[in-house]
Image 1: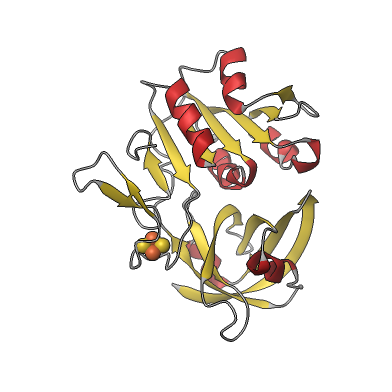
Image 2: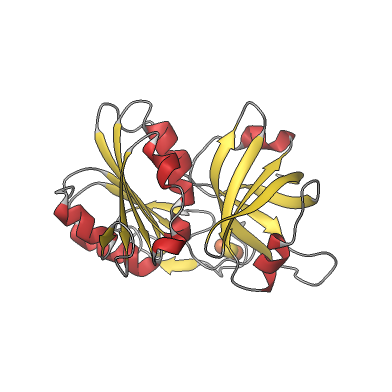
Amino acid sequence: MISDLRVMSNDEIAFNTYEMKLYGPAVAQYTMPGQFLHLRIGEGYEHMLRRPISIADVDLIRNVVTIVYKQLGEGTAWLRSRKPEDLINVLGPQGNGFNVNQYSQEHLIVIGGGVGVPPLYYLTKQLAKNNKVTAILGFQDQSSVFYEEAFSKFSEVYIATNDGSYGEKGFVTDILESQQLTNHPYYACGPTPMLKAIQNKLDGVSGYLSFEERMGCGIGACFACVCESTNQQGYVKICQDGPVLKAREVIL
Ligand code: FES
C-alpha cells in the first residue's frame, strides 16, 4: 500500500538518532511488529530509491506510527530536515514481521543492537500482554542509548555499551551469559555480526532474527537483499521473506 503520511514530530533522542512520528489513516494497517516502511526520500528524481525503516511503535487509536533512524547519509539527512505537517510518501507495511501469538506465559528475551532496538519496542509491548519479557539492548556508548525507560514499562531491561560508559561493558551476548538467560525463546534485531553471535550463543534455542539488510525495491523484485539460506531454494529475500526469519534460516 502506498500512502502519504504527515509528520507530527522529528526529534533527536540520542546521539545522531532521531525519532519521527507520522500520522494518517493508513497507519491502521500497521498491526504487526517487525514490519518496515519504505520511505520515499527527496523530491523529484534526486533519490529514486526508497529507504527501509522499521516500525518502532504504533498508536492505533490516533493512527500515529513512530520510526527511529540514524542520520548516516544524504537520504537520512533529508529525513532529518522534515518538519511537522510535511508529507512523506510511504510504501508499506512491508515484509514479514514477528508472530506475537506463539507463546503465552513464557519468559521471552528480546535482544537489540543500535537501530535494531526500535522494532523490538512494538514487539515487546505486544509480547508483554501474555508473557514475561526481558530486554537486552546494546549500544556504542552512553550517548547512543535510547528507549531504556520506554522498554522498562513492559519488560526488565539490561543495557550493554561497547565502552562501558553505561550499563554493562561489552556486548548483548555477555549479558545473556551474566544473567543466565541462555535458555529462553528469543527475538533479536541488529547488525549481522551481532545476530551471528547471538545465534551461536543460543544454539538449540528457538529464536527469530530480524535483519537489517541493504534494500532496493523493498517488494521482492530486484534481488538486492538476497541472502544465502538453509531453505529448499537456497536463498531468501530479506524484504519479502523477512525481515524476520527463524534463527538458522539464513546462513550467517
Ligand atoms: Fe528488492 Fe528485496 S529489496 S528484492
